[in-house]
Image (cartoon, each protein chain N blue to C red):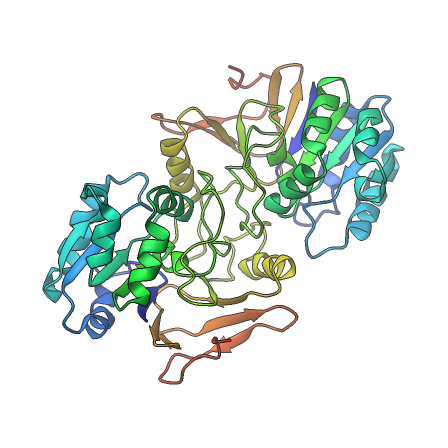
Length: 234
Length: 234
């Protein structure tokens, strides 16, 4: 399996998906027929969201269709060379995929050789569950299990900072609660600007920042970007 | 019904629940037999959590039992004069209450005259759903419907600030997504340090800060603390 899992879509001072273009090119190779899954978009119309991503990926020669426009989305997933899942609200994304029978279709197709690109909610969807999302539970997705294409959980937009003076839980406290309730999980806190490249069972961290690995009963471990695969395969 | 719904438990420079003592006293009147629901606590043992709240409420003469220690919690809820629900993880709180059959028991008892005190997750639990929690979905609560003792949603720890340089959604963006998906909802963004006093259908905002009222298709409205009831009853 080949996946590109990005923390987020925009870096300060950069255009939409700018920082993702080079890793996308490396992932795509000669694949060009892509399906876009816009269901994490809630306040943006899915056509507009698809157009925005199409424009950002045009320099890569990608031919991109919105999965919401197709009469038989499951069949189309089965023929796609690339599946791209955008960010937004993770609960809405999972609910819409589940209702349309797309979870097993996407997982099967990526296991069968399609490339998977996801950012933010789209990166979370590739994990066993969406239990590490930061999003508000605006709709009930009918279960938290998701694609399970990797065997770790991503916490996108990872930071341990709080707004000044705020008393709410820090991200590390939230992840400590998660690992108390779900000690079998491994979590990668993926800061904005970073991404994970998953290539046939090996996961590599890339981007400008250190990430953090969380496991139950252990102190958080700093992960350095670089060519060495992460210790995240079980 | 009489409820006290607090955004949070601690203010900077103050002791645990210090800012809640005066409004608790006003709510309690001559009620003294209280049940504490500690299920939002995930990394803190429920006995420790109960002891901490017991100590904080001792100056009020409250006799407090942890609902987790009782053989028949549903019966005990039916006899309680006060039900107190602490903060922590809202998903864990709702799951544990649902599994023990406590949702309808608590709702029925509060409708029957018991006072309800909740902070953070405990304030969210009093709402129709937990869809406005900021917490991480560490466990599946088996549906997002909660007590429905008020007909609006509370967003506790409300702030629209992000940590410096962070690109994730602001709270107002998250609430705009919620109201797109659930346009029937009314949300009160309740800043830390504030609380709502609900007394027989009238809701009053108290504390040092303005809150914010969110409704679908409308600009957010600033709510001022004071004696005037809020426009939140439908």
